[in-house]
Length: 209
Length: 185
Image (cartoon, rainbow over all chains, first blue to last red; front, side, top):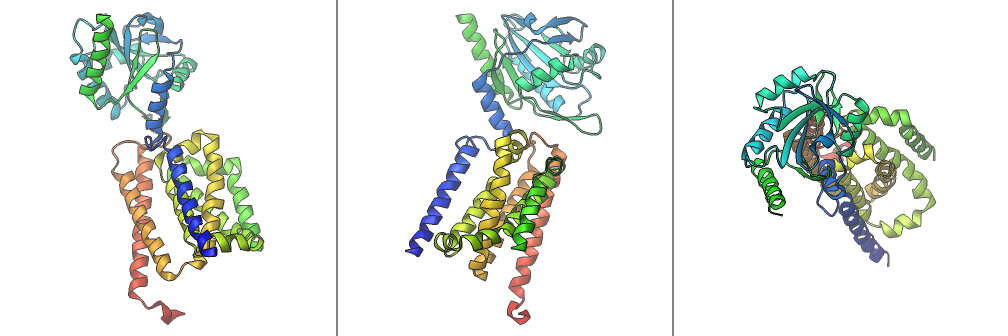
């Protein structure tokens, strides 16, 4: 009888372990908080909050400026020496792959700085040149109001941790916002081809309709 | 019973909000100090449960295998990068950490340990050594940040912490396999 219970104990523990891992990883799909976050965002499709942008041409406008256009968003800071450069380089690659007819008409590219005290319009203007951004169909902007910035970062699940040297650790991705201002996809910024073809498919459908 | 009281005291101390904040602010301390201390608190408190409910442990953990499996399940669960992140952002996960590590890992570890022979103990050491090596390599070699709440450099530090632990375990395993333990008893 006791031996029996002991084996039953093993089965119970293994079942418990399986259940724990199943729910802890959303059915074995998300082993990092980042994957879980992206899955959740795609499901929730949060609205882009009301924020005021100031771009490299010193223009100030709300995000609704881009109404009726898709917007591909990235989050950066210009003194970043690591991932932001890759991120923006890849963004320019995606930009080049989108058919010209769509650029500015159907889709706008937008890089948002989360370091507004350092990244003033002059700095952003210089930064945009490194990536051949024209400042019009691909804009670089900051959100000066910290509360608005925090709201956006929170809604889009962007986690920014400052280190002690004026740098930041942050998660990176391409965020695709639709014409109504809802976040519809979070794409891997390292997958240039995949992201570009995904966007082109969406735009083709939009124009065809 | 004194032991159980010290265990409870340690557990309460670890649960104090300022202590929680300090220990969790650095990745390697979160994983290699707070979590093991919670297990140790459980091991100490286990005395109380073992004396109070000896029958339960006798029937359900007769040969120590169910208990040690439970210990390993909990250990492995807290090695998933996501769980450590969520312990910082979700209260429910944080609460689960404070319950699971002492009571579902520490308590069964103590009960099982005395029931396992030296052969099974060594197998447990080998399993933990392999786990430490694997995680160490994962954290050191991973090109991406696995935890959103910590900097990449902290992740690498943690990885080396695991590798160091694994190396120490290997030294221990070599030591016991090349020396005659019975000569010292």
